[in-house]
Amino acid sequence: MKKKIAIALGLILIVAVVIGAVIKSNSDSSVEVKTAEAKTMEYEDKVLATGSVELVDSVDLAASMPTKLTLKVQEGDRVNKGQVLAELDVSELQQQLKDAEAGLKAAEASLARARKASQEANAAVKAAEKNVAGAYKGFMAVKSLFLEGKATQPQVDEAEQAYTSAEQALQAAGGRLETLKMQDPDALQLQVDQAKSAVDSIRSSIEKGKLKAPFDGVVFQVAAKSGSYVQPGIPLITVGDPDHLQVVANLSEQDIFGVEAGQEAEMRWAGAPDDLVKGEVARVAPAVSTPSMGMGETETHIKVYITLEKGEINIKPGATVDVVLYRVKPRQSLLIPNEALVGEGEEQAVFVVENGTAKRCAVQIGHSNELFTEIEQGIKDKNKVILEPDEIKDGQKVRTTGGGDK
Image (cartoon, rainbow, N blue to C red; front, side):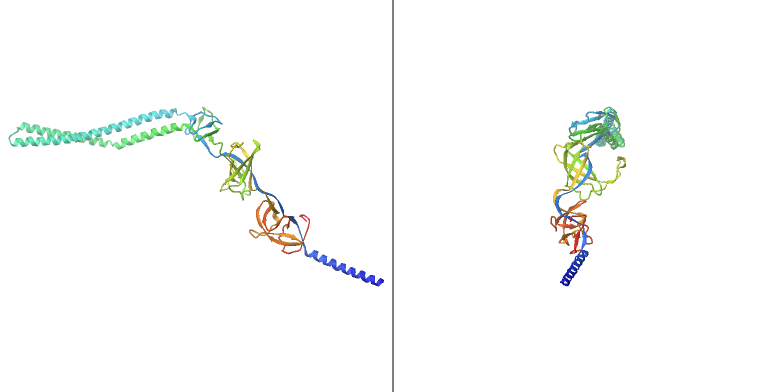
């Protein structure tokens, strides 16, 4: 009896050893992996930046000459197109205009006299030519009568003298005409043209002395005092349309990827912290802007232009705003950690754990941010995905370990 018990115990021990060896063998062939659970939750992809509010339509009015300024408006005034906002002292120009107009009048008078004299000289030549023809005809007629004995010698002499006098008069008229032609009427016309140009130029300068509103809008800035002496080219008055604003945000080169026209944007301003201003990306600058050292900038950036929604907007030009650009608006998506993906392009995949085995699943991905990637097709909600599966093979035995979902 004791012998049978001993044999039975021996058999049990052998079976236990075999089972342990099998378990150990299976354990040794599996690989420890960290996993995470694919979850359906809210996903968004946004960029945070700061921006400045600018007028889309604005014009800086500047003086065209160094002179004294007289203001007609002040900051905040609404103005109409063509309204005079300031005047420059043009008293010296007005005196120059009087002198130029007098010079033009004199040049025109000289040209008129020259033209009249030329006309009179031409008429005198034609009249003299007619007189010569008549005198010659009379002389020849008297001479013919003299030969017939019907006229006396004194009559012939008188007719010849009349003819000679007519020729002399023609020569005198012709000489005067030639003298007038030498005076060059084109030069007189050029003097008139130059005088007109001078008058027009001074009149234009006087008109530029009135700084006028280029369109209906608001005076946003006045950079000089009435009565001050101003220099040309320096902006004095800024006029803009307060109903047409934009935000210009500076994005780093790292954040610009995926930002494009049509995306939604939200802005908040410290001056009205409870108001959320919405807008839309209008365009992205085609080039990277270099730092403006005078403005304290140290990094390159790319400008993104954002149009604001029309309507009541409690925000002011020149304000600095906090900007949120949505590459992807918040939405429910199936997400996995980025480190669960393997492959590139259209051949990306994940490994899911099913009954202790790694199964490779091709996936179709959507957007991704710094943590998660959207999965549009290939796995389901709550699937266990293996993290950093670069060394994992399809069908390989795995066991989960700490650091991820069990």
